[in-house]
Amino acid sequence: MDPSVSSFNPLLDLLLPHIPQSAALPDPAVSTQYFSRISSLALTSIVDSEPASLSSSLHSLNLSLQSLSSRSHKSIIAASNHLSAVPQSIQSLHSSLTTLENSLPAIDSEITSFTTNFSRDGTYLTNRSRTHLLSKNLDRLLDILQLPALLQSLISTSSYPTALDLLAHVRRLHSLYHDSPTIDSVYAECETLQKSMTANLISTLRGPLKLPTAMKTIGFLRRCGTKEAVMDERGLRGLFLVCRLAFLSGLLSALDPLKELAEEERERRQNGGDENTSSTDTTTTTTPSSWGGGTQTERYLKRWIEVFREQSFGIVSMYKSIFPNALPAANPDPPPPSSPHPHSPIMSSVGIGIRSRSSSTLSNMSSSANDDDPEGGQAPDPLASFVLHLLSLLTETLGRYLKTIEERSVRESLLTQVLYAAGSMGRLGGEFGAILGVIECFGMGDGEREEGKDGDGEEEEWVGVVAKHKVLASRLETLAGRG
Image (cartoon, rainbow, N blue to C red; front, side, top):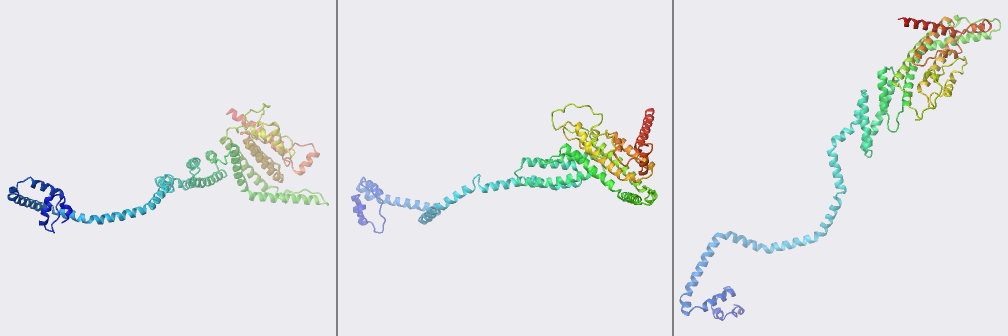
């Protein structure tokens, strides 16, 4: 027994020798309280009643312990087990805290890297937002990517109004989203298809054409212009005339077999004339039987004039129907007033006042028109140059082949057809009957021409044809007026 425990109370010193060595030391506070109660008791009470009281208290405590053990033995056992595991848990906690302390620098660096990479403007979140936006608008993107295929399908089926609307939609998308590579790619493909559509429309103008189709085609071409190359009104008119001229040239080229026969007759006539000229023994003239008299040439010219008359009238009338208004003036200021011109704008450029037989008159028509300046300083309507070109084709063909025909009546018949063609053009403001005066071959044959020079000055052949035509026209007008 520890002596320090007995120093608190003298009574305890007396009892310590009687306490077994294996017994646990009493609690000093409990010992002090018990010794205070003992001191207050009489000796008889201590001797007689105190042992019974202690036995009763011991028995009561034993019952309480038994009852507590019966009720809470599981909790007590669990508490005991937990209590025994507390040191091990504390050791494990210490180890974990040490590991956590050592891992804090690595955790801090990972947190810093995460906040840097996954910030609002970071690469990962930006890519994720783009991917999400792409997934959200996938259907719209697929529709946009299918626009070139849809446009090609519309062009192949000649659905030009819908194709032009679709092309306008693509151009509007490109103007709004010009920084998008996808829109740029779709726009480039559609512009390539637009060139194909323009080529198809131009090929339509170069083929057989009716007025409604021509008006629709010109309307489509007006809408086909791009931002880089906008087709102005003058260019569109010129394109129409060039395409129709190509169609006319194709029709005239179909007459090449007849043209070859006419060329053979012309060459035989020239060769026969050269042989007669080189002969020194006798002076003879070329007989029509030696080169056919121009029969094949008559067939060619007759068919050529028919095609020319029909197509020239059709082209000019179609042009005036499609482009009814004059070209807009390039200068907003009105041109200075000039003397009134009695003819249409077409013939003011053609130069209807032709009276000379010189072959240079046709080439000077445009220069005389420039002197009058009917267009107020700006370039004339392309139709004027087109009519000039048609007249040059007519004069070139007639000047080359008409003199091959020997019979005067046949020539007069062909000249009458030319006057009918001139009358048809005259209803559109392009009468060119006076153009007969500039063709050197009009008039009598070679022999008759020499006789006319030495004889009584017989009038030229074309003058008689024009006079007969005027008489016939006046009679028709009279009959029409009576009807």
